[in-house]
Length: 393
View 1: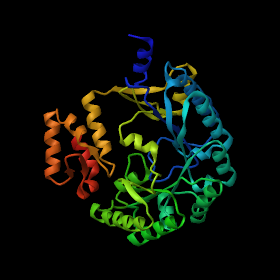
View 2: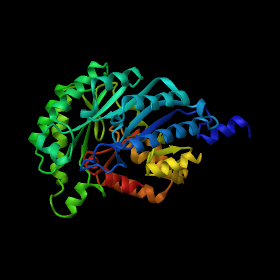
View 3: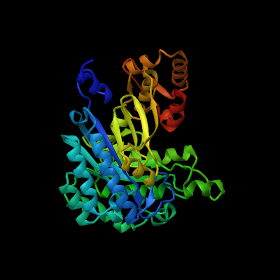
């Protein structure tokens, strides 16, 4: 086997050429934990931040020096958390500079940074724009003061509104806003108000998520104690329909179950996940899918740092996926897209008779709609997408 071919196989490149790659960077720091958040995070602490910054530099260098990595083009970079913008702008920009030095970014690389409204100052937005960040994702969640308190959010509604203007003044045209529905005691009327305020800000992208009760969150604990009830799925539909009605009027099209965008502004990084393309995760708890393997980093800043101090990648739970398993997962994630998946993906997965039976049953039960060219979730399937996914894995 040639040296070139060995390098390609190590990095999961396709025979017809080196495949591009997405890069996810997890910044685990926040000033507080919101009541709904289940992501790995730690409260901001200067000593821990310094420890993390040294470790992330080492992780970037270790991956960048792997054979063949510099031949692979990075087409998307997504910096999430936590709250990336809880770091001083100089520190975050230094990490982005290291990524540019270590990897080969495409000329049109989409670089997204998540931010909270209260952390996005004029200075910070200018720093990010000058560092080549192309997209901001601002976690507003709600414009209703009571709902914001219920969610445990920092900052005010005024700060949430002004953060978008700050981003625009810095030159950002690709701006996503995150919102949550299904909040305890939330009404369709308050949801309509939140969406109205959001649309007045004229974002290019909106992510609208149903509240999910995750273990380890304050909401999950309060739910188990009977302090509130989960919104009925039939009532959730009312919120989704309200969003569909309002967003269509402003030319925002739904392209994924939870995401709407103006033409040309779909999130390219998240499309990688839904289309089964490769991505590399950096930072504690970050997940990767490379070379037909799925793996994650340790979920501890301390353990993460110790591994990298020893010159080792902080990887745990590595799983080599069979071709059949990859085919099934690609369909499950791809069905989240409103366009659905190509019919040939289904034909490949249907070589598994048990899987084919489950698929046929879902079509008969009106969860899936099949044509000669593709398969999509029906309206009923969209409402129970998680159930459909579990039955197809």
